[in-house]
Picture (cartoon, rainbow, N blue to C red):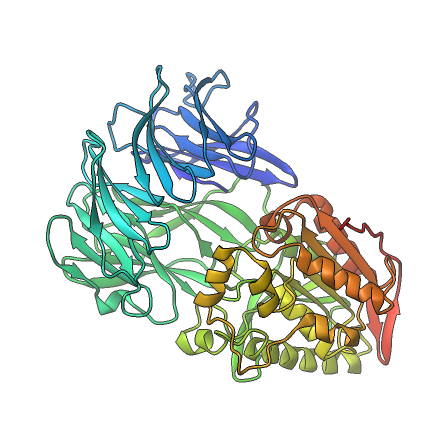
Length: 605
């Protein structure tokens, strides 16, 4: 995770995670073979920010405490890798921030951008000699992104979100700290600068002024911005990854169901050329230098690593792909495939871990993703790999409301939380449960993360005899309960996802949980900033009142972590708990049968 490229694309850096151990990784790129090294002696974590330089040096951003951030420079050794004898550039106090590389040939290592509070952000210049950090300008609003618009590094295009307003693009003159608004459609739209080429002053932008996000392009200093139809496909999220070093072509990513698709867009003739690529998930950032593109890539049996695309000529639609075999061993036991299943209103794509005959494997887990506007991807997943390695089959469906399946599939669930998506889950379960019952197999276990945990609880309440168990990781109780309990940013997100439909009876887990019969594993983070832990505490208390017994049919766990610590980071202890719960809970025809007790930790409060 945390991939970053040097200005010329000669080096990259990343954080590799194996279990609970994080290690710094240095990548030597250039024109030859990719060389990856794990560098000992660096205390890095999942939140470490990386800024590699072309000579092999590295700038590290480490968070030390809630609002204190240390930035350290590690010069390159004779081998061209970061040495452990670093020197501190300085300390910044801020809510958060990130690093930006300088343009090619810039004298300074790069920039730091901090979000100081809800009203202000600051841009800092990094230096390799005192003063190590120098403030350039403090600006109103929250800053994000950043792209150089000239090769000398005098001006930076960056996105600004004023308090109470919508995002727009600005250009900052670093010589005097002045700035001006550059990319703006309306007060009601979100307008972003995504990429810029200093060579041609090509700007790649996005705006939702038309009612949905659209990609566009223009040339800095010219009044016309183009939003080509060829760049827009409703219901299939697209975003630009990189501009070639001539500033003539744009690498575009599309999420098409559970896999990534890549295209090359050429503004000069408004052409969009699809690229042949293996099935998997591409992620940001990308680097396009000469005829070589490098981008992070993952498949179910391969944790994220660097993929290299080589173009034989400038019009090639079939680049040669090579996938670097990371030092983290491949996970061949995670045998996965894409399948199409019958949903309540049409076909549903799903990812299956477990090989052929998965419907009739002894233990089957149905996994529901968060969001709700999200989707499972055909990529390495630590949770699914952990379950599959223990002999379980995982079925991960992208029910209605999932992204990447077109407008109708997406919009059908907006504002209807626990509606069409729950219908799909119940439809899938009915077929699975019927087939498995005939074969004398246990009913499936339903597992969900975040919004998917809410959906899993609703499914377990709606069909109490059809599930062997339920795993709910950081669930909400209902849209209304979350809206009343969460921070302003979460309430805004609920509004963006369709709001609360007063004419629809939206599912409330608390009012339905008396019908829940399956054993339940309920996990939440005490510092969850998205779905407050109070949601799970209320449910836990109510289930005890209804006669549930801790360690028998109710296992409640609170972790000292945030939302990502429960639904994305997958610490080894959490994986063990989930795996143990799923292995020790089965159901037989006519009711629930418990095979073994599960150790319980009851969180305070």
